[in-house]
Amino acid sequence: MTLKIVVTAKQVIDPETPTSAFGIDSNAVTVPSNQSPVINGFDEQAIEAALRLKEASGDAHITVVSVGSGFALDVIKKPLAMGADELILLDDPAFDNAIDPTVTVAALAAAIRKIGDVDVVLAGRQASDWDNAQVPIGVAEALGWPVATVAKKVDINGTTLRVERVLPDGHEVVEADLPAVVTVSNELGTPRYPNMRGIMAARRVQPTVWSAADLDLAIGSLSPAFELVSLSKPQSGVETEMITGDDDEDAGRKLAQRLRDERII
Amino acid sequence: MADGNGILVIGEMAGNEPASTTLEALAAGLSLLASLPGEKLSVVLAGASTAAAAQVAIAHGAQTAYTIEDASLADPAPEAVVAAAQEAVRQASPRIVLGSKTILGRDVLPRLAFRLGTALAQDCTAVAIDDAKRLLATRPVYGGNAVATVACVSDIAVAALRAKSIDAGEPDSSRTGEVVALSVDLASAVRVRPVDRVEQTAEGIRLEDARVVISGGRGLGGPEPFKELGKLAALLGGAVGASRAACDAGWVPSSYQVGLTGKTVTPELYIAVGISGASQHMAGCSNSRTIVAINKDAGANIFKDARFGVAGDWQKVLPAFMEQLQELLG
Ligand SMILES: Cc1cc2nc3c(=O)[nH]c(=O)nc-3n(C[C@H](O)[C@H](O)[C@H](O)COP(=O)(O)OP(=O)(O)OC[C@H]3O[C@@H](n4cnc5c(N)ncnc54)[C@H](O)[C@@H]3O)c2cc1C
Image 1 (tube, rainbow over the protein chains, first blue to last red):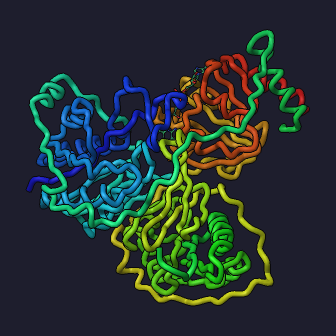
Image 2: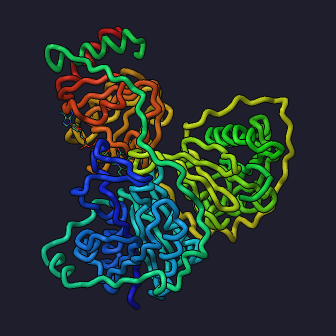
Image 3: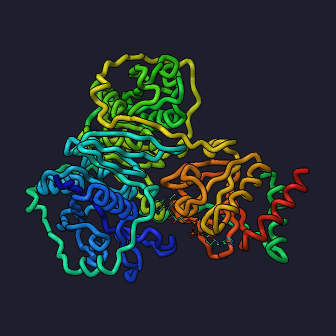
């Protein structure tokens, strides 16, 4: 039996963009137009987890599903170049809602039902734009499946899922019956880089595109959870005192003296 | 938004006491009640023993404490707490549910929100009520590169508060309230079964409790220099932390990570060595009283958040700093 894996992946603003380059325009976060978007980092780790499951099982099929609009194809195809088998874009202006997980959850759950017979859904633990850490949990709730969060290791044995979950001081091992959802954290390890063969293969694959209508989703009938009131840049109220000296060693000594004078140490 | 019936806090236990984050959520709830005249504040506490905690919660303003006691709740599975919270919501029918973005909360609150037909206002640093009596939730987004305020427009609002962003109130033992024991089928709620746990506790002072934290980043270049940070921490009675880059490189265990997806620390003194100050890192330490940064790049972001900075090579700055400190401390 082929293990059917779905990985959810989101195109986001590169979170490594310098803070000073972030702007706000008509209640949306902006970065300079020459900044290429990326796949959310934790989602790449989810893809890596899927590829490891595929290697372990020998017979698996990985479908990557992404929700949004205005996809950069060269970016969103990266999972294919890494080794995923198929890419489905849920592309509809109605899905372009940054602040409310309700629509994203409904679209993903509908797509997973449409794909059918999915054994496991892997997702990044959170997306680096709204840091909501809840869409995969919402998908699990919508499908009625169990969800194990913040995984650093994912194994499947028959119909049993076994996950090592990261805790602040160690980890916990949990088990659940499939089908299930898993959210993956960076402790899983660095995702593999696409190799030349993967990149060439990905070029030839055209993603499947589904709209809200293809999913039989009446977006208008979903009640939103949130309305955006305001978006702004954070204020830093700190006045920085730079400690200088004749050289680095001298600056170090002066720093100690300064902290002592201020009774900080 | 639904009328009346106030606010329910999804409590968490620390031993037999309410967790500090639960006291923070109760304080937030009390301040919201000022805009909801005649409505009440409730709390739900799921634990092995809840009687004492219920009284503490009442002293912190809860008018009703819903309790669920079971030996399995000493270290609760998130799904068990969700089941307990759902029952408390059924009985209290609140317009607002408040919890905390703790390790347990980040598993419990999204599940609860979706079961209640809404979504979670995640990681809030402030909450308020607007003229239409909607919950306004303010929260960092884009790793802290922006701040959003959203209005919760569903019938019930669910919000997770960022730890240590709202002060816990003072207890008042003259406050009174009722305790209502709930009966919930916990066993059938749990589908994610815990089978093992591996602790990886560092020796010495816990990072979260330390009054001084010395954190190292990618700029340290390897695991060895963390020993130097350890010596400095020992000198100042503190603990060692790290950026995610240093953890991902395997130089220190992931339990050292400070930041948005690591630990939140609020020491008196936070010294960042070879850390660029990405907003996701600062999310875990920006409430420290004094931040000191040592970074060779004078333009590094960390200097925007630091009270004191040295633009220099840590390999030269740090030993001289420590030597001088030793002298000053005698
Ligand atoms: C969703 C999300 C969540 C994240 N969560 C976290 C989190 O919880 N915690 C976290 O830390 N990060 C987190 N990150 C990662 C974060 O964005 C940064 O990538 C990370 O914090 C960078 O670590 P760093 O400062 O050690 O490395 P760098 O950014 O590479 O900085 C290294 C610094 O060292 C300095 N340096 C180099 N050599 C020397 C020298 N000899 N002397 C002095 N200075 C020197 C350099 O000038 C540079 O500023 C998260 C990212 C995302 C997208």
